[in-house]
Length: 193
Image (tube, rainbow, N blue to C red; front, side, top):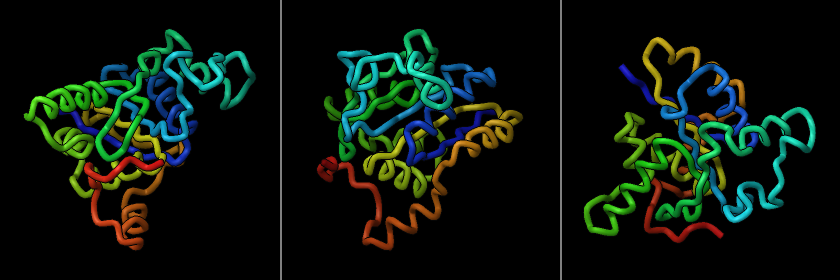
């Protein structure tokens, strides 16, 4: 049976590194998704990646090089990064099955058929609704969401790998949001500037 494991990262670099780790572990790209806020305009589709248009793999070693490798052409899942607008969140950079689900949901919503956006896509994938609202708000506020579908026997190994890259704790983050008056993700709210 498939299970959906989701993590929110404050650092886009950490999320990209975690995605790269999943690929190195042999997790099929069809089961990995990433949704990253583009509110700071870090991704430029016309240049094929980072705002500077360069392949960061050539820039150096360590995290920068590994992240560049993830973003570079032919790099599996993330070679398919594209821009997508999500109601209440704004422009995101997305790849994978969740991005495809959102694209289909957006087309349905335009036709009057689908509602729910990112919250709906996450809950449909098995993420608890309360967590889905926190994850959606986290992306709205500039975070990066990494979601992977795995068989039950792989869940522990994948969870451990994702947790090595410093994800936020969804419960703590939800409490932080609620302490400031937030109650749930609002897809009708204007995207952040």
